[in-house]
Amino acid sequence: MSDPGLWQTRVRYAETDQMGVAHHSVYAVWFEAARVSLFDSLGLPYRQIEAEGCYLMLTRLEVEFRKAAHFDELLTVTAWPGEVGSRKLQVRYRITRQGDELARGHTEHVATDRSYRLTRLPENLLARLSHPGGDRT
View 1 (spheres, one colour):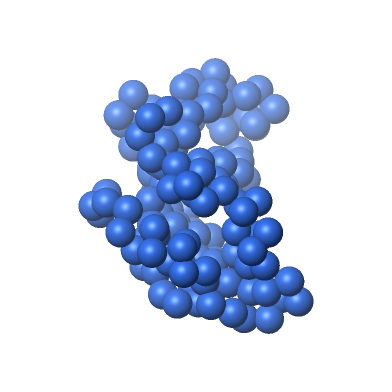
View 2: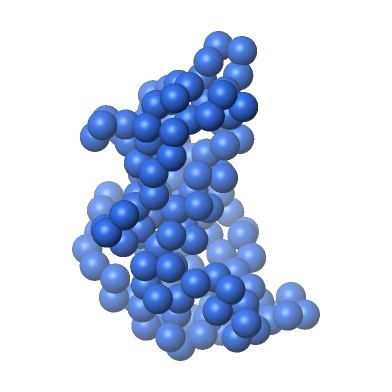
């Protein structure tokens, strides 16, 4: 998609429960896919960040479920940077179906080196995450 931080998916049958509703566990997977897409759109793919010796360790995941998603529905997941500091960052998400909000949430990450010690975010990542565009809350 041309808009940074947008990722689309259809709800797969394997992602639903017996009631045909998307299982709560797949929202974290959808958030991650949108986050990877966001970083790609900023010109900083995860592989490049990790090649530079930085891992973005997940420290928090929050999801607010508003409406159910069902098998074969087309969903749009939007991701954008939230709070960004020298060692940690927040990514915010919204999941919609034809403009109707189904869920929102955020993840929080800390930067670590290859030995999993706390470190600073790479300057190129910090700069791009600090100035990506407006707030989408």
